[in-house]
Image 1 (cartoon, rainbow, N blue to C red):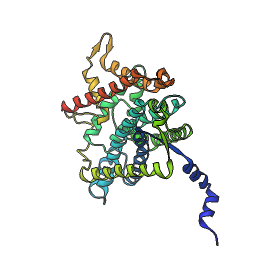
Image 2: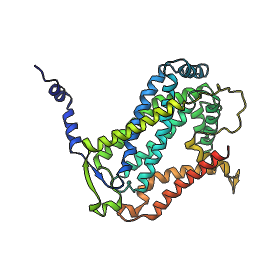
Image 3: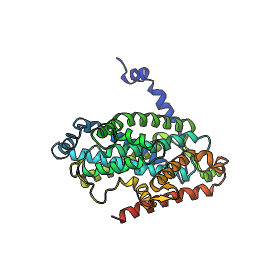
Image 4: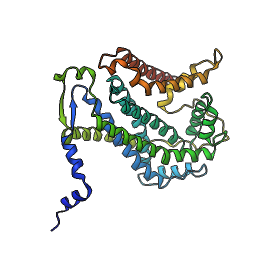
Length: 355
């Protein structure tokens, strides 16, 4: 009689993977908690893929049918409102946890050699996740999403040199139309997922190759660190944390379902107080506070340039922080990290309080 387990292992080679997991060790120290957001992100991205595929069975990406198809999902499809809210809330949680993950690795100096490419791939993953949120926001084709997208694409169009072309690329023309919805749909369900999965695979493979980073304070004192097996110890912690986050996601979807709002009207004036999603509020508020002209520069254009340079700065951090590269204390970059966090929090709070 055929032993199904041996038959399966021989033909898939999965035994080598299981053997690797059994031998893999994870550093255990007082900062180990900050390893968990990465695996939680993978779980939430899985939720996004599953719920997104189910929503695609009913969604119709045209300006005549987009709102009605989402309305059908929300009001008439069994568990449709729960499914849509699960997708929307998991999108918010992904970006929130991605922020936490990025800044925790920044403050723990996890970008030190030889892990520069891990940081760079993770930074690009963060940009892709933000673009995911931006592209998905328009798809329900409601009033809020239409005018928030109009504001967002105008900001992108303020970039020097490439702004005009970027605006035309995003909108499919001078103004938001059905072509814009089609482009955002293609970005959200085809182009961005392919880029995300490829980048995530590279990111995870690099982590497996170099191992998990240990903070400089722990690395300089071996007595503060020990190793624990990835399987089953660390994997169990990952599962518990993932279950906890997923339970919170289900509670949010059940008790705080996402509202659909009013159908978008391309001819209607923009309602007062239109703002982008919460993760863009700090940028939105900054651009509002910059004067219309600063010296010989247009204020909005100058603000966009500053944010673009900030993105370049984030990518280049492993090569700028020479102290951490030599396993020395780097108080300047720690201060910069806290400064960015405080700035984002304060500007977001100002935007909410200004409603």
